[in-house]
Length: 315
Picture 1 (tube, rainbow, N blue to C red):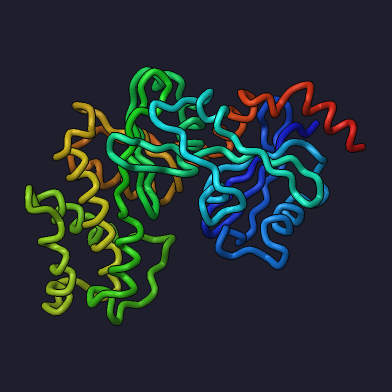
Picture 2 (cartoon, helix red, strand yellow):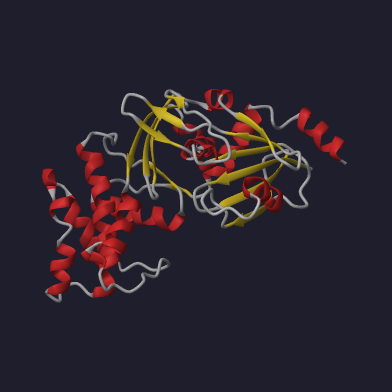
């Protein structure tokens, strides 16, 4: 019997999951309805459409839907933050079709003035999948804005953002480095070019990768880097810079790699780069959001007798 609907609602997409009472996902739906690309009727219409035919059970949403540009702005929970802290910060919204929606807060690291929204739910989900890491662990969530997260005693205690994905897009689409380059195939990787980029970042030392970025242009003009290899070379340099910066700043625990959480193909790139830094093989969890939504939903009593009563009352 369905007990909960979980929403991973970001800037560019909306994903809905229908959970049963044991946390298993019975059906998943996706739409290109991020908070910046909503259908006619806005948030209400998007929710009604993606949940069409599903029972009137509680809905729990995480991500940019709780941002200032989202459905309802939900404040940040300060570190240290765990499931209970996130649960206490949930803001309730009632949709036009009568669904009760709870929006999970983001997390703010006041010490470093850094924030994340949506990734906190992935962290909770990752810890649910790897409970042995709850004592002390570091997680890396690659993406448009990569998040480096430190966990102690099951609580998020530190957050650091590196704008790797966004910087790649800017260089690829709006700089001389990307001029004339054909559209890259996201499903394949030129490993030779990628590895070369990682090594350039690794060996840049204290100067950092900004001193080496223009090598993509120089190598291409010299005929030593094929035009269609430039995107993977740039990707390698930027991902390599994340690892270099993480090591140089002392973020990484000695002789360990952080748990990678996120898109499987992107995590594979980060794992490959880690080996070039002679770090241990990095493990990856590809769908932590579902586990996190379920875990927070249970803690918030969205799943239980009250949910059953609501579902029965709707029929």
